[in-house]
Every structure is written in structure tokens, then in C-alpha cells.
Length: 110
Length: 113
Figure 1 (cartoon, each protein chain N blue to C red):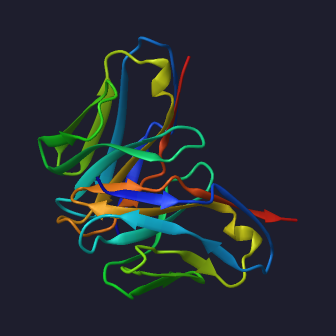
Figure 2 (cartoon, each protein chain N blue to C red; figure 1 turned 90 degrees about the vertical axis):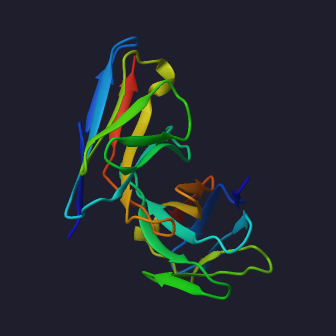
């Protein structure tokens, strides 16, 4: 079946560091891919989506590019801030379901 | 603008007791609706979805049931709670069709003792 893999369970960075969170997927065709962010005690919020090869999604300084060749949709941000502390989920749309990655917790070190 | 409301905000219930959680969407007609469960520190697990009133599809069986009595309302329930039901329950909506993103409510925190 379809699946999403996030390799980093947790990432600890200092403010202004560069962020990369890896997301790889397994699915046939061109599934729609999403990045969501979840703050403690809240529901996930959509960051952005992409549905075509080489399509770039972006929001709030975060970006990711759909890569069919490597089946990846890695999340990047050039300079993280304390307010970016949250859990980030990669997901793909499969019929009426969203298939979710395991999530990556971003910690900003003081 | 669309708003999604979940009730209650939090519940503490005894094992074996019944449960009913609710979700209401305002500002969007005929949305697709979804229920999710999230263990503390865990990822999201989709439980049910509904594309129309009176029709609910199960994704995962966790001794829970869902109903959609109105176009804008989605109910999650069980007659007998288990310890394993503890967690964070999220309702979400999307536009009709298969390609649209889902938007989440604020969630209900359930503790079963």
C-alpha cells in the first residue's frame, strides 16, 4: 500500500540555522503531497501541497519540491525561528485518506 | 470563512462508560468529513470518513462508530470505552472530490481511567 517515511523523529537546531526534514513516499502515479505543522494541543495546520513533478510548494518561509524521480518531498527553511518549534508531518492523498508520516519534532535550542 | 468546532474540549471518562464526541462545520456545504485519533506523541490515524449525510466509511476498527446525521455534523461514539481509547480526537473537513487538502478542528482530549 501507499506509505510515507520521515526519517528524522526529532531535529534540534539553533535560531537562524537551516532546516531540512526528509520525506519519501511510496505510491503509484502522482499522488498529492502535503506538509502539515502541529503545535502542542492543536490540530494540524496545512503548510502547502504539491501534485506535479517539480512543483514547489511554499508558505511561511518553508518550501518543498515534488520530486517524482527520487519520490521525495523534503521540507526546507533557510533560517528557523523559535516560533517554528512544532511537529511537522508529511502526508499523501490516497483516495479519501491521508497517509501520514510519523512526524518530525523541531526543537529550537536556546 | 469556514469554521470547525469540536465538543467537548476535553473529557475524563471511566473504562466501560459511553462516549460521544461531536464536530460541526460552518460555512461550507456538503464537505467531506473525517475523524482522526492521535496517541500522545504519536502520528495521526484516520478512523472514518463521510462524503454525504447518512453515509460513513470506516478506515480502522477501534471499537468506535461514527455517524453523520446532518450535512454539517459528524459524531464519534462508543458504548463502552477502553483504556486504549485515550488520546486526541480530531475532526477534519475537505472539499468534495479526491485531491483536496484537509482542514482540522481544534481537537478533543480524551482521558480514559
